[in-house]
Amino acid sequence: MERTFLMVKPDGVQRGLIGEITARFEKKGFKLAGAKLMNISEELAKEHYGEHKERPFFGELVEFITSGPVFAMVWEGKDVIATARFMMGKTNPAEAAPGTIRGDYAVQVSNNIIHGSDSPESAVREIGLFFKEEELVAYDKSVAAWI
Ligand code: DAT
Ligand code: MG
Image 1 (tube, protein in one colour):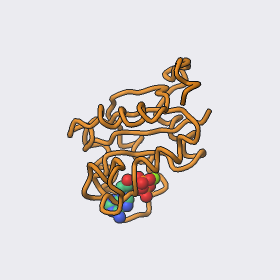
Image 2 (cartoon, rainbow, N blue to C red; image 1 turned 30 degrees about the vertical axis):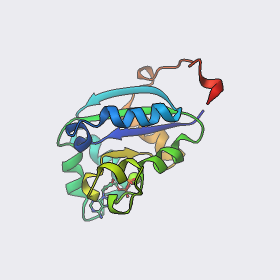
Image 3 (tube, protein in one colour; image 1 turned 90 degrees about the vertical axis):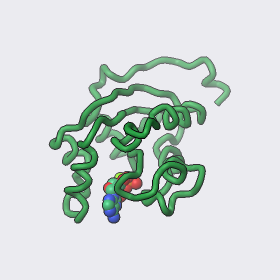
Image 4 (cartoon, helix red, strand yellow; image 1 turned 120 degrees about the horizontal axis):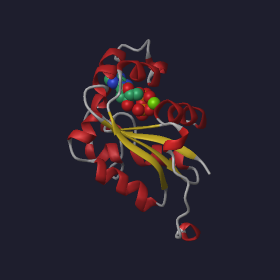
């Protein structure tokens, strides 16, 4: 079963959106495998966003993501990586469709509420950066056959 790394960013935590966001993935039918509220160190931020290190906004991005606690999660399910990205909406909230998380709750690209892995490779990499294997919980949900 596919896994992805999702994270409510500091703006989402401050705005009280952890419940709203996790509810969407739960109701969709995905399974939560792990979650924690945490502060991101500068080192972890730079590693996580390493692909953007040459971009002009990199400094701001690292500053923002370390500016307050984030809610880090691992979710499981069929096609969860691409589906979660679709549910998040486009990176720039001005272009994110209504009904998506960024479309419903965000205004500007620097404060876009949620992070989600963009490929199977980045999902493996990001889950490994944020979670130890023993922090992820394997269990069955009785409704699985209905989803
Ligand atoms: P995504 O988060 O949708 O995967 P990304 O990987 O291209 O988007 O960029 C990572 C984050 O960097 C993004 O969520 C917000 C920030 N960002 C992207 N483009 C930006 C820009 N032009 N100005 C400021 N921040 C930007
Ligand atoms: Mg990205």
